[in-house]
Amino acid sequence: MSNLNETMKFYLTMGLSLLIMILVGMIPPFGQMTVYGMQLLGVFVGCIFGWLLGVVVPVAILGITMAGLLVTGTTIDNMMIALFSTQMVVMIFFALIFVYGLDKCGILNFLAAKIMSIKWCVKSPWHLAVSLWLCTMVCAALSSQPFATMLLMFSMYYGLADKLGAQKRSPYSVMVLVFIAAVSAIAVALVPYSGMILFATSIMATAVQGVTFNLPLICGVNFLVTLAFIIIGAVLLKVLMVTNVLKVEFDMSNAGELVTQKAVFDTKVKWGFFYIILLVALMLVPTFLPAGSALKVFMGRIGTVGMFVIVVLLMCCTTVKGERLMDFEVAMKKGAVNWQVFFMMGTALVVSGQLVTPQAGLALTLQDVLNGMLGDMSAYVLAVIFIVFGLILTNCITNAVAMQLIIPLLSIFMIAKGVNPAYLVGIAAIVLDHGLVLPSGSPLGAFLHGNTEWMESKQVYLFTICSSTCLAIAIALVGAPLGLFFGA
Image (cartoon, rainbow, N blue to C red; front, side, top):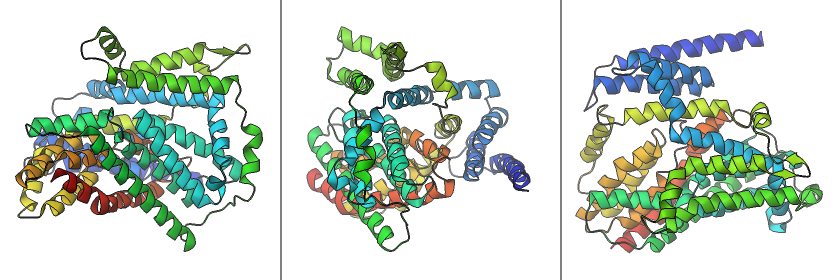
């Protein structure tokens, strides 16, 4: 009977998703939306509906297929090619292989053991969660790679949960993991060499000419906002635990003893650290090289995907005591790549990316809505509205697109109020990277929704909304006042 119910749910979900794709696409365009935009919107909404009900890969393939059939000027061929050729999708494929290799090295168990050897970290489940979030902040800030940081920290938590008895899909596990993803996203703009900061300020410089700013100061403001977010999340976790709304199914009375025997700094672990340092170095070195230098041009030819490919290839060629550090073929057989995440993220990026192009009209419609709502408001209210609106928007469409929509408007309105927008733009850079609520918001959001082994979709929505709310409070209490103070 259970299998029959699951089968019926599958067919019903696929049928309703298809119906939504067709019917929404037939709605007459509104605002500055075009017929092309409405057809894409229909596919997008249909995919979100199917993913909400837990049917991931079939709905993703259905979405790509219907986009090729329904949307003017597209074919199934070019939509499917776009899914597999998107840079972010390819990069995440190799990132997943890389993290699998680190796990085979034993470095994740080693790091988990080290964390649990710190007395403060193992005082209680609450202390463990906060420790992991702070560790995530440091890793994400130094690497400026949110997805890779999230994968590493997730794998570390999996190892800890196995030793402590923390259950998969338990509210505690899901909240810890969701907030790890959130911190991974917003902590990537805490250092001056962060690509997210440079991207955001370049958008601002294009929108308003002659703005001067201090990059370290922007990063300092972002650090305080990120820290405020972690503190607010920690308070929320404590309240939920004290009131028994979130029950923890394990205790940590002998946590330190559980992993002592695993903390061995052997040859494989050393190689794991070497490859982490190598990957981070490859990503950071181009930032500090002079423009036009031969090495910078060469590094540019490698690219971000190429850096992962090179490190993975080197791991496959490294041998310890006659055994390869990582076997690519075995990695694929062992499920190193989460195909649910791969297809969901690829479909979301392709469809939402085209949805916000000028010919779709959605971006222009959203700008009209913002211009219509904003009257004679104070600079503080405007700043909070813009950034919180961007937080909502980035949970629906890709982060880079949300930045290109929000940052120019925020910059122009702040200049009109006599405020240097740079420090608010810096805050917007970390906020607009928090696309977790919907799988279309970011690769991190897609991974959360596709990680069905550890969390259900309804849990993802609940705790990502909680993390978004915590971030909005951090903006209102810390971010906006600091951004206005330094921009005055």
